[in-house]
Image (cartoon, rainbow, N blue to C red):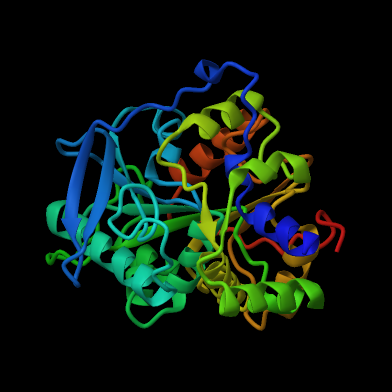
Length: 355
């Protein structure tokens, strides 16, 4: 039973309750605007906006992690867009934040469909603008799946297409298309949740599947998180802020954790789309996704790993919300503003992760 709880709270560690510190020291910027986008099944997707809404030069779309929601990116825009010319967007994924199905796992096909609908919404309202997608944890896992999913893979542009269209920076590049189809120019995957079933201990798999089948509505309370000692961040003010945020999902049914595990398993079989400009960032002190899971992901992939990799020594799971977040944010900014036609292809960081 304890093994199951450790696993569950490793996934839910973003809501560790540390209440003795001053949460005001970490205060992400509230969204400038909240738009309610109607999905293809008529459900509402809350879409939060920060930054330049009138004629922005680029769109940064963020996809949040498990138990989190879109506002978890509110602290990033100032660091990623020093010129104040971009519009950052993030949406509450189905089952999280302010969605009507809060606390229910939608399934990754529905989640992919929501991402598809949000990208179409962006393409219709900002035609021709470059889009850069940032996924964190579960959001990065969904991003991996989306790069290869038949419904969304065409949105993720390869560098060969980009080279023939322009030789400009991502902050100024506009696609040559005249229609509203969105074009994702680059993707950033922060601490991707790639802890597949095959990389978990057998007893962990057995207990989770047993609980999700027999007691799918059994809810795990966040009061146990601190006792298990799993920390997503070493910044106590971040943990304090998250513990007090009413939109963080705290009581999680086992069915949601099993659904997340299915998504992670699918993502663990995939690498960023070949030829698509991507950056993967991993911390060596990630206490949520174990290093063994990252190593298993890199070892069993049949795709040639392309793009750039950053492994931060002693970096925690919440790479942009930890004590060493400044270095990560600078790296992300440099990646977004570097020349779009220049694709670096680093080897998988097996040695840095001590695989």
